[in-house]
Length: 300
Image 1 (cartoon, rainbow, N blue to C red):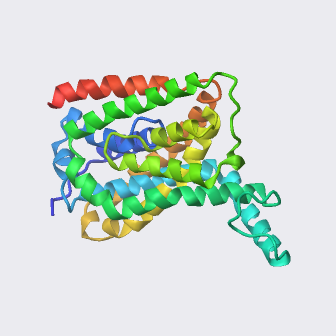
Image 2 (spheres, helix red, strand yellow):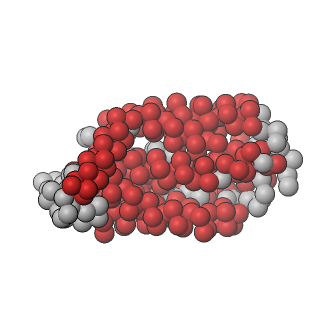
Image 3 (cartoon, helix red, strand yellow):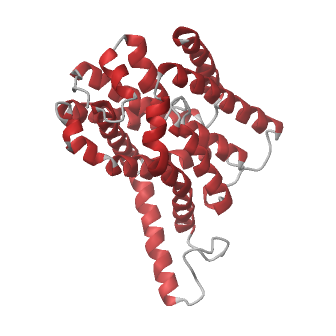
């Protein structure tokens, strides 16, 4: 196990970076690999691909902070969705016809329908994360690999926008509560790409949402709502790493970084939801492509 070495300045910078890049469709994991390498933070670079590393425990804390920022922003939405669950459960109890899984039922509570599709979307990425996250992180959490995947992330975003434009400006967009289980599974499955450092969780989910007929704003909302339980549960699942020997010497720094990640995530989601009311993924695709290629040249 590597000796823990993490300054408070590094913790703050990485916390802000995590909170911003987790929601901006440019890959938080990719930037957590590339930025330390570019800044010459060898203590972090050398620990990233280790199977037992204080840096991985630190990242767990940052993910929890990011999820808390999302929860604060979407607190009223989540309360509404949970109220929908309670309403649907009461309907099932009082009406022998209503169910908790027949989403095409016109009498189903609309808020519960969205909660149900979000739950479905978490299944593929959740299973993939449990099975492969540590293995893929050890194999690909390296600057050159992250640069290549960041470049491919840009390609995915730009191709998604090109497809959207081909459908015409006046194509009907689905509402969030009209998402079908098949589309929810597709969006959740797209997030599996984010297990490779360089692909963006929000970017792949938004692109899949656009392909499924959502507007940019609704694709962003669904992506951020989906990210909340995925990031939080992934962080809590790995929290024993931080509380165990891997967290020795970095717990206070992790707490500070998590607080900055929480604030950065809250501000980022506020900005992005305004952005996507009138704008697209194109600037983020161009950024990923240019920065990714530059880093490929730098680390090749």
